[in-house]
Image 1 (cartoon, rainbow, N blue to C red):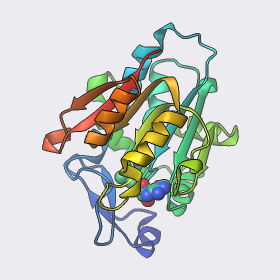
Image 2 (cartoon, rainbow, N blue to C red; image 1 turned 180 degrees about the vertical axis):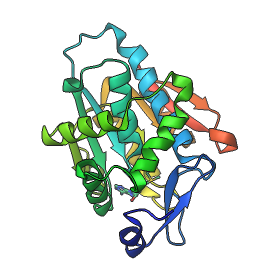
Image 3 (tube, protein in one colour; image 1 turned 30 degrees about the vertical axis):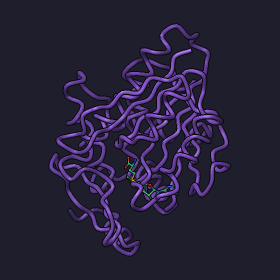
Image 4 (tube, rainbow, N blue to C red; image 1 turned 30 degrees about the horizontal axis):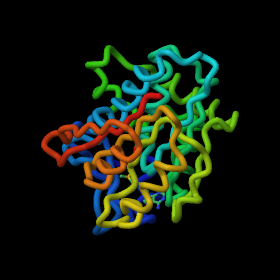
Length: 254
Ligand SMILES: C[S@@+](CC[C@H](N)C(=O)[O-])C[C@H]1O[C@@H](n2cnc3c(N)ncnc32)[C@H](O)[C@@H]1O
């Protein structure tokens, strides 16, 4: 696991771990790992690609011209951003419609990712392994999209400012858009108590979600279930990935 980025990641107090499906994750020293140790890529596909699939079935009736605002809360290694682009390309959805908002406390992760996007070197980056992990995890979805295509499209989105890489969230006012799809993947309540509080989540649901939305997360909490009911949305408790605690999907179709 000697990646081009290893030295920088270690200097930022990350440990690099290979998970059970051979895809990489990061652990901040002495704290929790970013992904399930049985499979970072497989878990991301299971929890978050599924949200896109669900959204796809919700908006079948909407006109092609409507843009789609996606919030990826907790950029980390960018699994969910890559999955979003793959979803659009696989389903022949025009990327002109996509407005992708990432939120990340550690801005150096964006720098590393953006360097990978523009690098002429085709191997040896941790993000190459993120991509290949996703490619393996998506075999059951009928194939993937090439790494080159994903990188080109992500660069294009960045250049067109359709992918906005934003900093840490400390309060609800740090969310500035109305989102159709939310990947809620900042760290757990053990580390980010406030972000999982009923008060914070209810402000998010009330003020920042579209009429039709999908909100997905690797956790399943009573607060989310209550908010779904209060928002006239459906709450789906999902099995956790490989025996992990339950995940959840909240969605509303109006
Ligand atoms: C579980 S990891 C996310 C994994 C990521 N979704 C991926 O695909 O690799 C959680 C991430 O949330 C970030 N984070 C934690 N608190 C945050 C905050 N208040 N605002 C923005 N990002 C935060 C962490 O730095 C970490 O990168």
